[in-house]
Image (tube, rainbow over all chains, first blue to last red):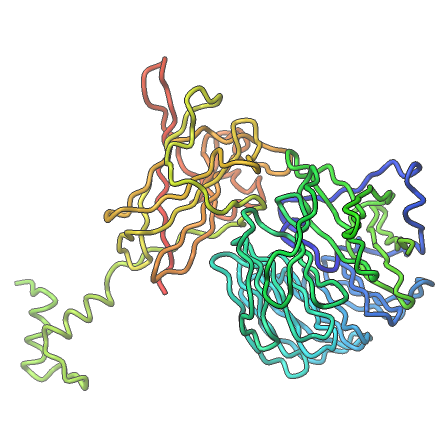
Amino acid sequence: MRRAARRALTAEVALIISFAQAAQAQNVQKLVTISTPEKISTVSVCGTTGLVAGAARDGLIHVWKLPSGEQMASWKSGSPVSALACSFDGKWLAIGGEDGAVKITDAAGKLVRMFAAAHATVDSVVFAPDGSLLAVSTHQNPVQLWNPGTGTRVAELHTNFSGSTSVDFSPDSSLVATADADTAVRIYDRNGKLKASYTGLLLEPFVISFRPNGKEIVVGGADCAFSILSAADGRMIRRLPKSPDPIFAAAVLPDGDRVLSLQLDAATIRNYSVMLWNLGTNERREVGIAGKNMVGYGEISNHQPVVFTADSDSSLTAWSIPN
Amino acid sequence: MRLARRELLSKCMALGVLTSTANLLPAALAAAWQEKEKPRLAPTPAVELGPFYKRLAPSNSAMRAPGDPGMPLVVTGQVFSSRGELIPSAIVEVWQTNHEGLYDLDGYHYRAKLTTPADGKYEFSSVMPGHYPARVCQHIHYAVTAPGCHPLVTQLYFATDPVFDGDPDKNYRRDPLVTSRELVRPVTLVGDPKDIHATVKFELVLEAL
Protein backbone atom coordinates (compact mmCIF):
# COMPACT_ATOMS: atom_id res chain seq x y z
CA MET A 1 0.00 0.00 0.00
CA ARG A 2 1.15 3.52 -0.64
CA ARG A 3 1.85 4.27 2.98
CA ALA A 4 2.39 0.74 4.07
CA ALA A 5 4.24 -0.48 7.11
CA ARG A 6 7.42 -1.00 5.17
CA ARG A 7 9.05 -3.13 7.78
CA ALA A 8 6.18 -5.54 7.83
CA LEU A 9 6.06 -5.68 4.09
CA THR A 10 9.74 -6.21 3.57
CA ALA A 11 11.13 -8.11 6.50
CA GLU A 12 9.19 -10.38 8.73
CA VAL A 13 6.01 -10.70 6.82
CA ALA A 14 5.04 -12.40 3.63
CA LEU A 15 1.69 -10.93 2.75
CA ILE A 16 -0.15 -13.72 1.14
CA ILE A 17 -3.68 -12.83 0.25
CA SER A 18 -5.80 -15.85 -0.48
CA PHE A 19 -9.39 -15.16 0.26
CA ALA A 20 -12.47 -17.09 -0.48
CA GLN A 21 -13.76 -14.26 -2.59
CA ALA A 22 -17.29 -15.30 -3.41
CA ALA A 23 -19.10 -14.21 -0.28
CA GLN A 24 -17.66 -10.73 -0.27
CA ALA A 25 -16.84 -10.03 -3.85
CA GLN A 26 -19.43 -7.25 -3.86
CA ASN A 27 -17.00 -5.17 -1.83
CA VAL A 28 -14.52 -4.80 -4.65
CA GLN A 29 -14.57 -4.92 -8.41
CA LYS A 30 -11.78 -6.06 -10.67
CA LEU A 31 -10.72 -3.08 -12.76
CA VAL A 32 -7.96 -4.56 -14.87
CA THR A 33 -5.33 -7.28 -14.82
CA ILE A 34 -1.95 -6.46 -16.31
CA SER A 35 0.61 -9.09 -17.29
CA THR A 36 4.12 -8.23 -16.21
CA PRO A 37 7.40 -10.04 -16.96
CA GLU A 38 8.46 -9.85 -13.32
CA LYS A 39 6.43 -9.91 -10.15
CA ILE A 40 5.63 -6.34 -9.10
CA SER A 41 6.63 -5.59 -5.52
CA THR A 42 5.47 -2.01 -5.16
CA VAL A 43 2.99 0.27 -6.91
CA SER A 44 2.42 4.01 -6.73
CA VAL A 45 -0.51 5.88 -8.19
CA CYS A 46 0.34 9.25 -9.78
CA GLY A 47 -2.29 11.42 -8.13
CA THR A 48 -5.43 11.58 -10.24
CA THR A 49 -3.64 11.54 -13.59
CA GLY A 50 -4.70 7.97 -14.30
CA LEU A 51 -1.05 6.88 -14.39
CA VAL A 52 0.30 4.22 -12.10
CA ALA A 53 3.92 3.14 -11.69
CA GLY A 54 5.07 -0.28 -10.59
CA ALA A 55 8.46 -1.74 -9.81
CA ALA A 56 9.82 -5.25 -9.59
CA ARG A 57 12.47 -5.87 -6.99
CA ASP A 58 15.12 -6.51 -9.65
CA GLY A 59 14.78 -2.96 -10.94
CA LEU A 60 12.25 -3.21 -13.76
CA ILE A 61 9.96 -0.15 -13.73
CA HIS A 62 6.67 0.20 -15.60
CA VAL A 63 4.20 3.04 -16.03
CA TRP A 64 0.64 2.12 -17.04
CA LYS A 65 -2.52 4.02 -17.78
CA LEU A 66 -5.63 3.10 -15.83
CA PRO A 67 -8.22 1.80 -16.24
CA SER A 68 -7.06 0.45 -19.63
CA GLY A 69 -3.81 -1.05 -18.32
CA GLU A 70 -1.97 0.28 -21.38
CA GLN A 71 1.78 0.37 -20.82
CA MET A 72 3.13 3.90 -21.25
CA ALA A 73 6.79 3.25 -20.43
CA SER A 74 9.10 0.55 -19.14
CA TRP A 75 12.77 0.57 -18.23
CA LYS A 76 15.36 -1.04 -16.02
CA SER A 77 16.49 1.04 -13.07
CA GLY A 78 19.90 -0.56 -12.94
CA SER A 79 19.86 -1.64 -9.31
CA PRO A 80 17.45 -3.49 -7.02
CA VAL A 81 14.42 -1.35 -6.19
CA SER A 82 13.07 -1.25 -2.66
CA ALA A 83 10.72 1.76 -2.82
CA LEU A 84 8.80 3.70 -5.42
CA ALA A 85 6.67 6.85 -5.47
CA CYS A 86 5.06 8.84 -8.22
CA SER A 87 4.43 12.57 -7.85
CA PHE A 88 0.80 13.63 -7.78
CA ASP A 89 1.13 15.40 -11.13
CA GLY A 90 2.60 12.28 -12.72
CA LYS A 91 5.78 14.07 -13.84
CA TRP A 92 8.31 12.46 -11.52
CA LEU A 93 9.12 9.10 -10.09
CA ALA A 94 11.28 8.61 -7.01
CA ILE A 95 12.98 5.21 -7.00
CA GLY A 96 14.64 4.05 -3.80
CA GLY A 97 17.26 1.32 -3.88
CA GLU A 98 18.68 -1.28 -1.58
CA ASP A 99 21.95 0.66 -1.84
CA GLY A 100 20.46 3.74 -0.16
CA ALA A 101 20.30 5.76 -3.37
CA VAL A 102 17.24 7.64 -4.59
CA LYS A 103 16.78 8.30 -8.30
CA ILE A 104 14.42 10.94 -9.64
CA THR A 105 13.23 10.20 -13.15
CA ASP A 106 10.54 11.52 -15.41
CA ALA A 107 7.59 9.29 -16.29
CA ALA A 108 9.47 7.97 -19.33
CA GLY A 109 12.41 6.83 -17.22
CA LYS A 110 14.87 9.62 -18.02
CA LEU A 111 17.13 10.12 -15.03
CA VAL A 112 16.86 13.66 -13.72
CA ARG A 113 19.01 13.37 -10.60
CA MET A 114 20.23 10.92 -8.04
CA PHE A 115 21.25 11.32 -4.43
CA ALA A 116 22.48 9.07 -1.65
CA ALA A 117 20.14 9.08 1.32
CA ALA A 118 21.98 6.57 3.51
CA HIS A 119 24.15 3.47 3.59
CA ALA A 120 20.98 1.46 4.13
CA THR A 121 18.04 0.20 2.13
CA VAL A 122 15.48 2.83 1.25
CA ASP A 123 12.29 1.55 2.86
CA SER A 124 9.92 4.11 1.42
CA VAL A 125 9.70 7.31 -0.58
CA VAL A 126 6.67 9.61 -0.38
CA PHE A 127 6.08 12.80 -2.39
CA ALA A 128 4.36 15.79 -0.84
CA PRO A 129 1.14 16.45 -2.76
CA ASP A 130 2.60 19.63 -4.29
CA GLY A 131 5.77 17.78 -5.30
CA SER A 132 8.07 20.14 -3.42
CA LEU A 133 9.33 17.58 -0.89
CA LEU A 134 10.18 13.93 -0.85
CA ALA A 135 10.20 11.98 2.42
CA VAL A 136 12.80 9.22 2.36
CA SER A 137 12.73 6.45 4.98
CA THR A 138 15.85 4.34 5.19
CA HIS A 139 16.27 1.19 7.20
CA GLN A 140 16.56 1.85 10.96
CA ASN A 141 17.14 5.59 10.40
CA PRO A 142 14.93 8.64 10.90
CA VAL A 143 13.06 10.01 7.89
CA GLN A 144 14.85 12.54 5.71
CA LEU A 145 13.14 15.34 3.79
CA TRP A 146 14.64 16.10 0.40
CA ASN A 147 13.92 18.69 -2.24
CA PRO A 148 13.41 16.50 -5.30
CA GLY A 149 13.84 19.51 -7.59
CA THR A 150 17.38 20.24 -6.46
CA GLY A 151 18.52 17.01 -4.85
CA THR A 152 19.32 18.77 -1.57
CA ARG A 153 18.44 17.47 1.86
CA VAL A 154 16.08 19.78 3.72
CA ALA A 155 15.99 18.06 7.11
CA GLU A 156 16.46 14.86 9.03
CA LEU A 157 13.61 14.09 11.39
CA HIS A 158 14.01 12.45 14.81
CA THR A 159 13.36 9.19 16.60
CA ASN A 160 14.77 8.03 19.91
CA PHE A 161 15.92 4.84 18.23
CA SER A 162 15.46 2.97 14.97
CA GLY A 163 13.48 4.68 12.25
CA SER A 164 9.94 5.33 11.16
CA THR A 165 7.42 2.82 9.90
CA SER A 166 5.22 5.23 7.98
CA VAL A 167 5.20 8.84 6.84
CA ASP A 168 2.57 11.06 5.25
CA PHE A 169 2.16 14.66 4.15
CA SER A 170 -0.87 16.82 4.82
CA PRO A 171 -3.00 17.51 1.73
CA ASP A 172 -1.65 21.09 1.53
CA SER A 173 1.96 19.82 1.89
CA SER A 174 2.55 22.05 4.93
CA LEU A 175 2.97 19.24 7.47
CA VAL A 176 4.62 15.85 7.56
CA ALA A 177 3.71 13.23 10.14
CA THR A 178 5.68 10.12 11.06
CA ALA A 179 4.80 6.91 12.87
CA ASP A 180 8.00 6.02 14.66
CA ALA A 181 9.52 2.80 15.93
CA ASP A 182 9.92 4.31 19.41
CA THR A 183 6.07 4.38 19.41
CA ALA A 184 5.80 8.17 19.09
CA VAL A 185 3.82 10.02 16.45
CA ARG A 186 5.59 13.20 15.43
CA ILE A 187 4.30 16.10 13.35
CA TYR A 188 6.71 18.51 11.64
CA ASP A 189 6.45 21.53 9.43
CA ARG A 190 7.82 21.30 5.92
CA ASN A 191 11.24 22.48 7.12
CA GLY A 192 11.51 19.57 9.52
CA LYS A 193 10.76 21.59 12.64
CA LEU A 194 8.90 19.53 15.21
CA LYS A 195 5.44 21.02 15.77
CA ALA A 196 3.76 18.40 17.93
CA SER A 197 4.00 14.82 19.05
CA TYR A 198 1.88 12.14 20.63
CA THR A 199 3.61 9.70 22.95
CA GLY A 200 0.60 7.93 24.39
CA LEU A 201 0.94 4.78 22.30
CA LEU A 202 2.59 1.85 24.03
CA LEU A 203 3.04 -0.37 21.00
CA GLU A 204 4.59 0.50 17.69
CA PRO A 205 2.42 2.36 15.15
CA PHE A 206 2.78 1.00 11.62
CA VAL A 207 0.66 3.36 9.56
CA ILE A 208 -0.09 7.05 9.52
CA SER A 209 -2.34 8.93 7.16
CA PHE A 210 -3.83 12.42 7.07
CA ARG A 211 -7.55 12.66 6.57
CA PRO A 212 -8.47 14.74 3.49
CA ASN A 213 -9.46 17.66 5.77
CA GLY A 214 -5.79 17.95 6.79
CA LYS A 215 -6.82 18.50 10.39
CA GLU A 216 -6.73 14.95 11.61
CA ILE A 217 -4.30 12.08 11.40
CA VAL A 218 -5.25 8.41 11.47
CA VAL A 219 -2.76 6.08 13.14
CA GLY A 220 -2.87 2.30 13.45
CA GLY A 221 -0.45 -0.35 14.55
CA ALA A 222 0.44 -3.20 16.85
CA ASP A 223 -2.20 -2.13 19.37
CA CYS A 224 -4.86 -3.36 16.91
CA ALA A 225 -6.79 -0.08 16.87
CA PHE A 226 -7.01 3.17 14.95
CA SER A 227 -6.41 6.41 16.78
CA ILE A 228 -7.44 9.79 15.42
CA LEU A 229 -5.06 12.59 16.41
CA SER A 230 -5.18 16.34 15.94
CA ALA A 231 -2.72 17.47 13.28
CA ALA A 232 -2.43 20.84 15.01
CA ASP A 233 -1.23 19.71 18.41
CA GLY A 234 -0.97 15.92 18.29
CA ARG A 235 -3.60 15.33 20.95
CA MET A 236 -5.74 12.20 20.86
CA ILE A 237 -9.21 13.01 19.55
CA ARG A 238 -10.69 9.55 19.49
CA ARG A 239 -9.75 5.92 19.52
CA LEU A 240 -11.73 3.29 17.64
CA PRO A 241 -12.61 -0.02 19.29
CA LYS A 242 -9.87 -2.61 19.16
CA SER A 243 -9.84 -5.23 16.45
CA PRO A 244 -8.44 -8.72 16.97
CA ASP A 245 -5.27 -8.20 14.95
CA PRO A 246 -2.46 -5.67 14.50
CA ILE A 247 -2.87 -3.15 11.69
CA PHE A 248 0.11 -3.31 9.36
CA ALA A 249 -0.98 -1.03 6.56
CA ALA A 250 -3.82 1.38 5.92
CA ALA A 251 -5.07 4.17 3.71
CA VAL A 252 -7.77 6.74 4.30
CA LEU A 253 -10.19 6.67 1.36
CA PRO A 254 -11.09 9.91 -0.46
CA ASP A 255 -14.33 10.36 1.49
CA GLY A 256 -12.26 10.74 4.63
CA ASP A 257 -14.50 8.47 6.64
CA ARG A 258 -13.45 5.07 5.42
CA VAL A 259 -10.09 3.44 6.03
CA LEU A 260 -8.79 0.39 4.23
CA SER A 261 -6.50 -1.69 6.42
CA LEU A 262 -4.35 -4.76 6.17
CA GLN A 263 -4.18 -6.79 9.35
CA LEU A 264 -2.10 -9.79 10.31
CA ASP A 265 -2.77 -12.44 12.88
CA ALA A 266 -0.66 -11.54 15.91
CA ALA A 267 0.26 -15.12 16.65
CA THR A 268 1.49 -16.15 13.25
CA ILE A 269 2.09 -12.73 11.66
CA ARG A 270 0.83 -14.34 8.48
CA ASN A 271 -2.88 -14.98 8.06
CA TYR A 272 -4.11 -11.62 7.03
CA SER A 273 -7.35 -9.82 6.47
CA VAL A 274 -8.22 -6.66 4.56
CA MET A 275 -10.78 -4.59 6.40
CA LEU A 276 -12.81 -1.52 5.57
CA TRP A 277 -13.41 0.68 8.61
CA ASN A 278 -15.86 3.52 8.98
CA LEU A 279 -14.38 6.14 11.28
CA GLY A 280 -17.80 7.71 11.82
CA THR A 281 -19.71 4.62 12.85
CA ASN A 282 -16.83 2.48 14.18
CA GLU A 283 -18.02 -0.34 11.92
CA ARG A 284 -15.57 -2.58 10.13
CA ARG A 285 -16.03 -5.37 7.65
CA GLU A 286 -13.79 -7.66 5.75
CA VAL A 287 -13.10 -6.87 2.11
CA GLY A 288 -12.85 -9.75 -0.34
CA ILE A 289 -9.85 -9.49 -2.58
CA ALA A 290 -8.79 -12.48 -4.60
CA GLY A 291 -5.13 -12.23 -5.41
CA LYS A 292 -1.74 -12.32 -3.83
CA ASN A 293 0.52 -9.72 -2.34
CA MET A 294 -1.18 -6.40 -1.86
CA VAL A 295 1.36 -3.99 -3.29
CA GLY A 296 -0.31 -0.63 -3.62
CA TYR A 297 -3.21 1.68 -3.08
CA GLY A 298 -4.28 4.93 -4.67
CA GLU A 299 -7.03 7.00 -6.19
CA ILE A 300 -7.57 7.28 -9.93
CA SER A 301 -9.07 10.09 -11.98
CA ASN A 302 -12.54 10.22 -10.44
CA HIS A 303 -11.22 9.83 -6.89
CA GLN A 304 -11.98 6.18 -7.16
CA PRO A 305 -9.96 4.19 -4.60
CA VAL A 306 -8.03 1.33 -6.12
CA VAL A 307 -6.09 -1.50 -4.52
CA PHE A 308 -3.40 -3.44 -6.37
CA THR A 309 -2.46 -7.06 -5.88
CA ALA A 310 0.47 -8.89 -7.44
CA ASP A 311 -0.32 -12.46 -8.37
CA SER A 312 1.97 -15.44 -8.48
CA ASP A 313 1.80 -15.56 -12.28
CA SER A 314 3.44 -12.10 -12.38
CA SER A 315 0.23 -10.31 -13.20
CA LEU A 316 -0.91 -7.17 -11.45
CA THR A 317 -4.58 -6.65 -10.71
CA ALA A 318 -6.27 -3.36 -9.88
CA TRP A 319 -9.45 -3.58 -7.76
CA SER A 320 -11.80 -0.66 -7.33
CA ILE A 321 -13.57 -0.09 -4.07
CA PRO A 322 -17.07 1.29 -4.52
CA ASN A 323 -17.73 4.72 -3.08
CA MET B 1 65.89 -0.54 27.37
CA ARG B 2 62.29 -0.21 26.29
CA LEU B 3 60.86 3.27 26.74
CA ALA B 4 57.29 3.84 27.75
CA ARG B 5 55.29 5.88 25.26
CA ARG B 6 55.16 8.85 27.62
CA GLU B 7 58.93 8.77 28.16
CA LEU B 8 59.58 8.39 24.46
CA LEU B 9 57.44 11.42 23.69
CA SER B 10 59.14 13.51 26.36
CA LYS B 11 62.61 12.64 25.09
CA CYS B 12 61.63 13.30 21.49
CA MET B 13 60.21 16.69 22.40
CA ALA B 14 63.29 17.55 24.48
CA LEU B 15 65.53 16.68 21.53
CA GLY B 16 63.38 18.66 19.14
CA VAL B 17 62.62 15.54 17.11
CA LEU B 18 58.93 16.03 17.86
CA THR B 19 57.25 19.40 18.01
CA SER B 20 53.68 20.39 18.63
CA THR B 21 51.93 23.44 17.24
CA ALA B 22 49.29 23.05 19.94
CA ASN B 23 51.65 24.33 22.63
CA LEU B 24 51.04 21.23 24.74
CA LEU B 25 53.24 19.85 27.49
CA PRO B 26 54.68 16.44 26.70
CA ALA B 27 52.50 14.84 29.35
CA ALA B 28 49.32 16.34 27.88
CA LEU B 29 50.39 15.37 24.39
CA ALA B 30 51.09 11.82 25.52
CA ALA B 31 47.73 11.62 27.24
CA ALA B 32 45.98 12.85 24.12
CA TRP B 33 47.85 10.32 22.00
CA GLN B 34 47.05 7.51 24.39
CA GLU B 35 43.40 8.49 24.40
CA LYS B 36 43.33 8.31 20.62
CA GLU B 37 45.03 4.95 20.68
CA LYS B 38 42.64 3.35 23.14
CA PRO B 39 41.36 0.07 21.82
CA ARG B 40 38.24 0.46 19.70
CA LEU B 41 35.47 -2.08 19.87
CA ALA B 42 33.36 -2.91 16.87
CA PRO B 43 29.74 -1.89 17.51
CA THR B 44 27.29 -4.74 17.92
CA PRO B 45 25.59 -5.34 14.56
CA ALA B 46 22.15 -3.77 14.29
CA VAL B 47 19.09 -5.84 13.41
CA GLU B 48 15.47 -5.10 12.64
CA LEU B 49 13.44 -3.70 15.56
CA GLY B 50 10.59 -6.10 14.80
CA PRO B 51 6.95 -5.28 15.05
CA PHE B 52 6.18 -5.71 18.75
CA TYR B 53 8.28 -3.30 20.79
CA LYS B 54 6.27 -1.98 23.73
CA ARG B 55 7.10 1.16 25.68
CA LEU B 56 7.12 1.46 29.49
CA ALA B 57 8.18 -2.11 30.24
CA PRO B 58 8.81 -2.81 33.93
CA SER B 59 12.34 -2.63 35.33
CA ASN B 60 11.96 -6.13 36.75
CA SER B 61 14.83 -8.34 35.54
CA ALA B 62 12.94 -11.52 36.49
CA MET B 63 10.91 -11.89 33.33
CA ARG B 64 10.24 -15.56 34.01
CA ALA B 65 7.45 -16.10 36.49
CA PRO B 66 7.58 -19.17 38.72
CA GLY B 67 6.11 -22.15 36.92
CA ASP B 68 6.43 -20.65 33.46
CA PRO B 69 6.81 -23.46 30.91
CA GLY B 70 9.93 -23.56 28.78
CA MET B 71 13.66 -23.88 29.36
CA PRO B 72 14.71 -21.32 31.99
CA LEU B 73 17.27 -18.88 30.64
CA VAL B 74 19.59 -16.33 32.21
CA VAL B 75 21.19 -13.71 29.97
CA THR B 76 24.09 -11.63 31.23
CA GLY B 77 26.34 -9.06 29.65
CA GLN B 78 27.94 -5.66 29.85
CA VAL B 79 27.37 -2.54 27.82
CA PHE B 80 30.42 -0.84 26.29
CA SER B 81 30.95 2.13 24.05
CA SER B 82 32.99 1.59 20.91
CA ARG B 83 35.78 3.44 22.73
CA GLY B 84 36.01 0.46 25.03
CA GLU B 85 34.47 2.18 28.05
CA LEU B 86 31.84 0.51 30.21
CA ILE B 87 28.59 2.44 30.13
CA PRO B 88 26.72 3.10 33.35
CA SER B 89 23.10 4.22 33.12
CA ALA B 90 22.54 2.58 29.77
CA ILE B 91 18.89 1.67 29.19
CA VAL B 92 18.58 -1.92 27.99
CA GLU B 93 15.10 -2.82 26.79
CA VAL B 94 14.50 -6.49 25.99
CA TRP B 95 11.41 -8.31 24.75
CA GLN B 96 10.70 -11.75 23.39
CA THR B 97 8.00 -14.35 22.83
CA ASN B 98 7.11 -16.99 25.37
CA HIS B 99 8.29 -20.55 24.77
CA GLU B 100 5.42 -21.07 22.32
CA GLY B 101 6.40 -18.13 20.13
CA LEU B 102 3.73 -15.68 21.28
CA TYR B 103 4.35 -12.03 22.15
CA ASP B 104 2.36 -10.51 24.97
CA LEU B 105 0.71 -7.44 23.42
CA ASP B 106 -1.77 -6.81 26.20
CA GLY B 107 0.66 -6.91 29.12
CA TYR B 108 4.39 -6.98 29.74
CA HIS B 109 5.20 -10.67 30.07
CA TYR B 110 8.75 -11.25 28.80
CA ARG B 111 9.46 -7.56 28.52
CA ALA B 112 11.87 -5.56 30.68
CA LYS B 113 13.57 -2.20 30.78
CA LEU B 114 16.87 -2.40 32.67
CA THR B 115 19.38 0.26 33.66
CA THR B 116 23.05 -0.64 33.92
CA PRO B 117 24.91 0.20 37.13
CA ALA B 118 28.43 1.65 37.25
CA ASP B 119 30.03 -1.54 35.93
CA GLY B 120 27.78 -1.56 32.85
CA LYS B 121 26.43 -5.00 33.64
CA TYR B 122 22.93 -6.26 32.95
CA GLU B 123 21.19 -9.55 33.64
CA PHE B 124 17.72 -10.95 33.25
CA SER B 125 16.02 -14.29 33.70
CA SER B 126 13.56 -15.60 31.14
CA VAL B 127 12.76 -18.70 29.14
CA MET B 128 14.09 -19.79 25.78
CA PRO B 129 11.85 -17.97 23.28
CA GLY B 130 9.79 -20.09 20.92
CA HIS B 131 9.67 -20.17 17.16
CA TYR B 132 6.80 -18.62 15.26
CA PRO B 133 5.83 -19.06 11.63
CA ALA B 134 7.02 -15.73 10.29
CA ARG B 135 10.47 -15.94 11.90
CA VAL B 136 12.97 -18.67 11.41
CA CYS B 137 15.06 -18.26 14.56
CA GLN B 138 14.50 -18.01 18.27
CA HIS B 139 15.48 -14.48 19.25
CA ILE B 140 15.39 -11.80 21.92
CA HIS B 141 14.98 -8.18 20.86
CA TYR B 142 17.18 -5.42 22.30
CA ALA B 143 16.88 -1.64 22.17
CA VAL B 144 19.76 0.02 23.99
CA THR B 145 20.27 3.72 24.54
CA ALA B 146 22.96 5.60 26.44
CA PRO B 147 24.18 9.19 26.61
CA GLY B 148 27.05 9.86 24.22
CA CYS B 149 26.28 6.87 22.01
CA HIS B 150 24.15 6.02 19.03
CA PRO B 151 21.14 3.88 19.98
CA LEU B 152 21.50 0.18 19.26
CA VAL B 153 18.64 -2.01 18.06
CA THR B 154 19.62 -5.63 17.71
CA GLN B 155 18.66 -9.24 18.40
CA LEU B 156 20.25 -12.12 20.30
CA TYR B 157 20.22 -15.60 18.76
CA PHE B 158 21.12 -18.98 20.22
CA ALA B 159 23.70 -21.39 18.86
CA THR B 160 21.54 -24.27 20.08
CA ASP B 161 18.62 -23.21 17.88
CA PRO B 162 17.61 -26.30 15.86
CA VAL B 163 17.48 -24.09 12.79
CA PHE B 164 21.29 -23.94 12.80
CA ASP B 165 21.53 -27.72 12.74
CA GLY B 166 24.42 -27.71 15.20
CA ASP B 167 26.59 -25.56 12.92
CA PRO B 168 25.77 -21.87 13.31
CA ASP B 169 28.97 -20.91 11.45
CA LYS B 170 27.60 -22.53 8.36
CA ASN B 171 23.88 -22.10 8.83
CA TYR B 172 23.26 -18.77 10.55
CA ARG B 173 22.00 -17.25 7.32
CA ARG B 174 19.06 -19.64 7.26
CA ASP B 175 17.21 -16.76 8.89
CA PRO B 176 17.57 -13.81 6.51
CA LEU B 177 17.41 -11.37 9.41
CA VAL B 178 20.51 -12.84 11.05
CA THR B 179 23.05 -10.58 9.46
CA SER B 180 26.03 -11.49 11.60
CA ARG B 181 27.37 -14.69 13.11
CA GLU B 182 28.46 -12.57 16.05
CA LEU B 183 24.87 -12.31 17.24
CA VAL B 184 24.52 -16.09 17.58
CA ARG B 185 25.76 -16.80 21.08
CA PRO B 186 26.80 -20.06 22.71
CA VAL B 187 24.43 -21.53 25.26
CA THR B 188 25.66 -23.19 28.44
CA LEU B 189 23.46 -25.49 30.49
CA VAL B 190 24.08 -25.18 34.22
CA GLY B 191 22.59 -26.54 37.43
CA ASP B 192 21.71 -30.03 38.52
CA PRO B 193 19.43 -32.21 36.40
CA LYS B 194 16.40 -31.28 38.49
CA ASP B 195 16.99 -27.55 38.19
CA ILE B 196 18.77 -27.03 34.92
CA HIS B 197 18.80 -23.73 33.10
CA ALA B 198 20.52 -22.17 30.11
CA THR B 199 22.89 -19.24 30.35
CA VAL B 200 24.00 -16.91 27.60
CA LYS B 201 26.47 -14.04 27.65
CA PHE B 202 25.78 -11.17 25.27
CA GLU B 203 28.03 -8.12 25.42
CA LEU B 204 26.68 -4.98 23.78
CA VAL B 205 28.83 -2.33 22.11
CA LEU B 206 27.24 1.01 21.25
CA GLU B 207 28.86 3.26 18.71
CA ALA B 208 30.18 6.38 20.42
CA LEU B 209 28.97 9.70 19.03
